[in-house]
Image (cartoon, rainbow, N blue to C red; front, side):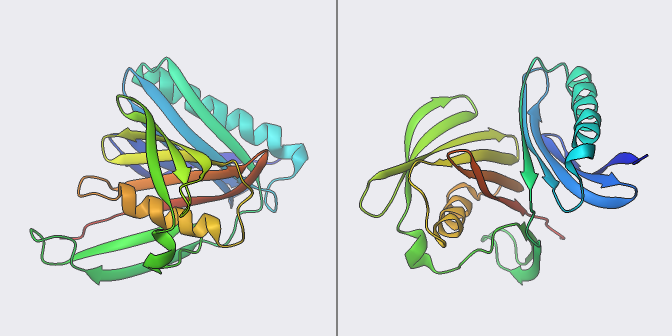
Length: 219
């Protein structure tokens, strides 16, 4: 029988990242953001290459139990977690030193992304967000292209030092478009007090990909 275990990898006051293991082999990740006595949102990503459809229910039972215990401990009554079951692309890890702002001399950042991000600013400028709804830390935006056409909806939750959201494309994106939108989102929501940014991208019923950025300061 497959042994399923969950291993917390990163935990802050506003969220956590948990790795899923099946028989000691990595099989996926859980990304959660929450506010005590208020709400919890997140995504569960399970790799089809590691978990068969036969074992999927067993894995999800363990994840549901974990999230259930977490929401009970935090006194949370509202939760929304999206499960994605598909092929997870190879993770890119990049460490570099650079100047972050005038108050810090040198910071080290770690980027962990499941989308290959293009650094060309010209491509990023092709997209913009138009705020259409805001309620506390939750906001919704229209995603517009360089002709100002609405091509999708972006829902964002900002809780303490964590930003998480979902991008729903209304027009089928081309090959490079998700990466360009991801870079625009990074630049839009990156701030001094934000340490983690996660977004899920979808078109109709298809999961396109995910983006995850974590900033660590080693000062």
